[in-house]
Length: 158
Image (cartoon, rainbow, N blue to C red; front, side, top):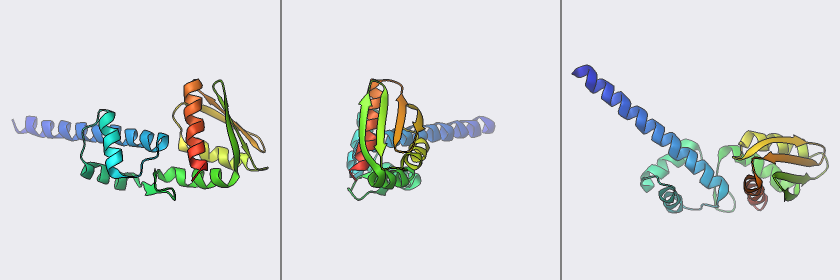
């Protein structure tokens, strides 16, 4: 009986860990796609996505994930801090054509911005190619390309 109890505790811990990982992945998606300024807003968006959690849980997730407040007051992922700086300083415009996002940068800026975009692992982005001042991002669909372009534009406006 003692082994069954220990196994039950281990299974409960594994389920809790999986729920936390799923919730934190949802937080990443929400923070990238939308400008979230408060823990309450984030908790509400998680509830809309089907996650049952308290503001205290969201607060712990924010600390664990290393989220920071950007200058615009929105939460930002740590891996996006460098990307936000590069996008703000180097990106001139962002356009979508079918399932391709084309980003124009200042001369010589495309390689650095492209590497930071790759490191951010935007959902829906299949791959990137960079020249001197142009980046092309192949997306899964027009909708995915539009979402990637909106995320880059949001970073650009910080």
